[in-house]
Image (cartoon, rainbow, N blue to C red; front, top):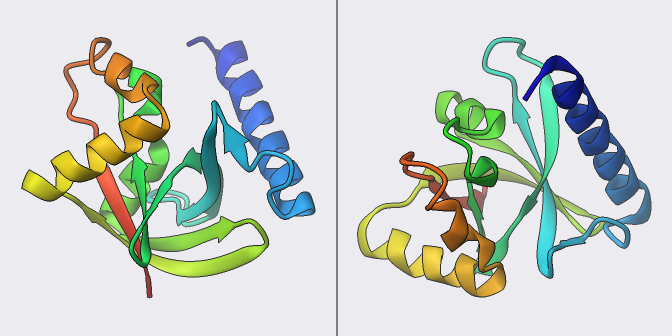
Length: 142
């Protein structure tokens, strides 16, 4: 993606976040049929907060997200931020919660991957676009 494409993508994300925050998720609370939360992480280099909309599924008291980056060969910045500092904040509707992040593995990863694919089948298609292992992340309240 070129400079103009990245700038447009950032502008779209900022607009989506703004609309979600202003409407308590009534606008932007669903994407491609799946529920969306706002995830705020701390920039690993800048130290500044960064908020992005991410599709999720609830799992018990936590929330599952996939660091898919649309099937790109690169991890999304939010995952790199969580890997460096595994805590952040989620907004679901009008509620905001501090969270800890943990990458899943083994049987838990498989179960949660299927749960996410059931909500948005496009995740399976992303596997054909990249060799990267897409982290399946469990966010739990701190």
